[in-house]
Length: 102
Image (cartoon, rainbow, N blue to C red):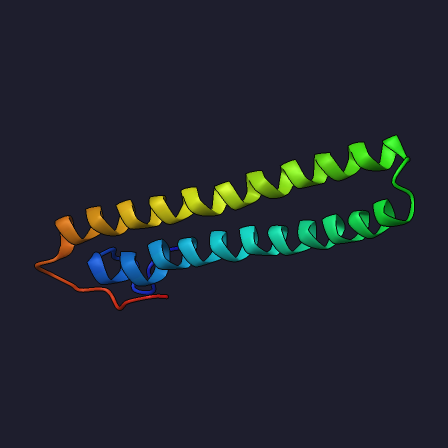
């Protein structure tokens, strides 16, 4: 996303690119986690009804693995956000202090 005035300074970068990108990725990952959690819950209910169904058990394990990977990705995103903010503060602290987001 380009800065509104066409020029790019520390405030524009913080407000219109870095923070927006972080929030967008965080929202997308959390939506995927919520959707996969619903699938896992449904598969657990099905497994409770039919605990001998090997296809169902295999599918449940696959979805649980996917959920764990997405949760790990959320942790990775938090580290990326922290490091990005650290670099931003090192480069732009004289010119601009971004608002806290959480």
